[in-house]
Amino acid sequence: MTSTSTTGTVCPHCAWPDGAEPYRVVSRHPTADGRTTWVRCACGSLQVRLTDGRGTRVVARGRPANPQVAADRHR
Image (cartoon, rainbow, N blue to C red; front, side, top):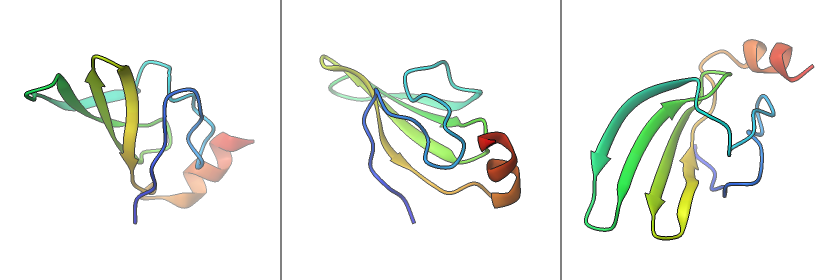
């Protein structure tokens, strides 16, 4: 299951700021309007970041593979 978010918020699993540099870029793809970047957050959840004329924002995110790791990083 994924949730929608916008830049200026934090990951609900580990509190890593959405506006920060991603921990790991998985892939980047040009689109007609900008670029889509798939990244792994600090907790391991997958995020889709869209960069266009409005800036960069997280448009979808998954859950971390290991919820305990996310809980430990949130403390």
